[in-house]
Length: 303
Image 1 (cartoon, rainbow, N blue to C red):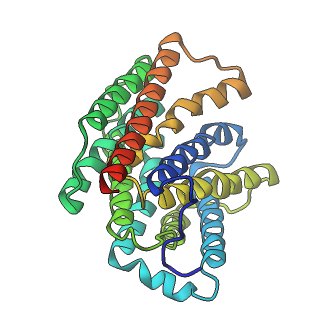
Image 2: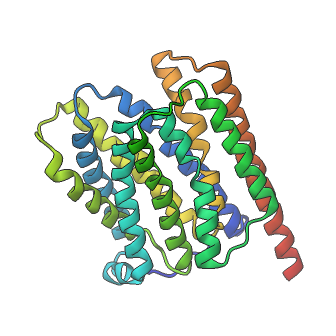
């Protein structure tokens, strides 16, 4: 397959397919907390390095199969936007880890909820994409839900970690806008480049490359299954969905992540966390349904 866009299934519009892919991306990304909690001895830099290797190999294999016979052209097709998106995503992987090490998980998750707002602003400035009123409402509702989920764990300390955490949603917004900038091309080739950047950043920080088979397997699952599959789905889906909606629809990750930990480790979330999760899920579903309806009305008006 060349860099040209593949035709979507005949019974599902391109926008609807994009929404579905982004919802599934959130499901894949939500496994991170469970997998990380299952690691026994590896430190953060070891995880980042091996996760990056697995992510790079997985995404390169995907692009090699997807563009067999035209792989070199596929990488040239991402252009400057793809290179910028790769750099942003690779540094975002690192920023997320730094933030986790320097502030609370609750602070990081709450700061990550700024992703839709960052993508909306950047999409408006770079792409001229307008944000529907219902999307703004869904973003505010999701932010309120995440606030409820995190209310018991939010802390004012760790200001440097909080500042670094802001780079993660910003990097995601840049990556999404890069995909939207060249929506007529398959931008998945930018993912292996992002993985290599993360590996190169982590490489000098790794004190020992020796991991137990258990931790090595989980680190590779993080790279191949969690962020590998997750960001392949994000990159594919973002081609057909406005920038502001992309991080909003992937907030299924925020809802599901504590549920997997609850089921695996019997760590029941607080009542406010459950309520907040339902609010976030409602916001995601409202946006998904409203967006599909808008797209259908637009198609009917064109016909």
